[in-house]
Image 1: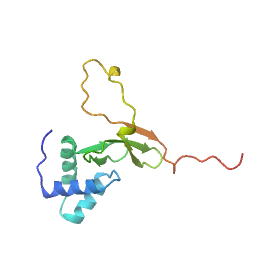
Image 2: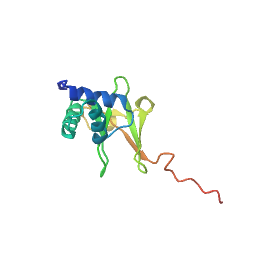
Image 3: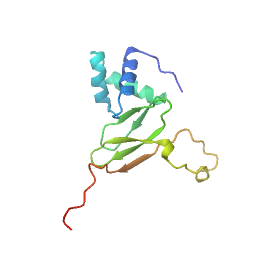
Image 4: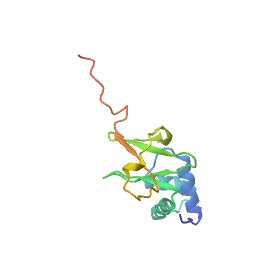
Length: 134
């Protein structure tokens, strides 16, 4: 893991991500950071996010055709994600509630460095409700 140099811009991005539980995209993060640092560019926010991802401080949630979303890795909070295919909402899923993946299923000698599970489906708001007519 490399150490990301702490600049005012990087600290502001980290603070915005720490405070958000919404899994924001870079444009939203940029808007929040500009409230603190009016001259920060979107390019600076993207470069900062890339460095934080490389450093393991932030994870990405990527969907084809949609903006990449970002999630700050809060210390001691190991979680996965459930993504609604209807509205795009992203929900945290406690990793401790997940069953263990058997290591025997992995190729011999495979070294696990990270586990990321994503559950795809429909949230309660997007799930079709059965009609009252029957």
